[in-house]
Length: 291
Image 1 (cartoon, rainbow, N blue to C red):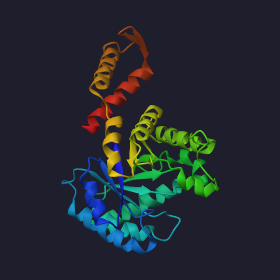
Image 2 (image 1 turned 90 degrees about the horizontal axis):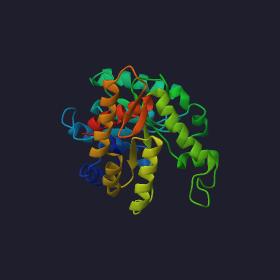
Image 3 (image 1 turned 180 degrees about the vertical axis):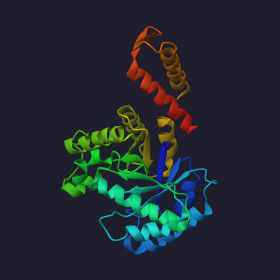
Image 4 (image 1 turned 180 degrees about the horizontal axis):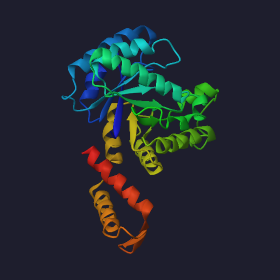
């Protein structure tokens, strides 16, 4: 996935609008975007949507953001939606690796009960919404073979630590939030999973969104979440692999494969070593996955 679009799970109208976008994934949100009194309605509509788009017929990945494990709504969320076989469950308010392990156990039991293929449902962790989480992101490694993505977030973290703002006067992130972003990327590499960038909240600022996408991609993120349908096409464009990038990556791989006993090769007057080979292979894999 390049783009994942958040949709409030209790709004049929917004879900339908999201379906009409080019988003690679739709996030049916049972957490922050719907009020407490609308949770049951959100669960019902989420299950109806999943059932209406069964496995084998989906053109998009379907994700469900559940409520945090530290509350009392998680099991109700999972019991309602697992039977619809969502492709991913988003775990908010990560604290320690035990959260991922517990969610894995819940999913395993419910997949058996509901007749969902074993290990089908993957996990995306939003890994930096609590101060505690920043000390425990390394624990994602080996926590579950369901774990496929880790993302980060600044607003919940700001609230958790009591920060008045997460931005400096010049618009850049303050130290804690730059650290959270960096740790997200490092934890993804450590766990062998994908790093997903957080949302860009000003959905009318296309230039700002492009800058955010390009900065995230340069840093190592491979996808990004959207809060508005109008953001999807820009995110897809910025996280796609161009034909020129794909061709260069193939030439790099071919050059190394033609000389397997050397550590450095020359290509178009440029000296390349093994990290370039690794990056080129990763670029090719991403391009094929996107197609």
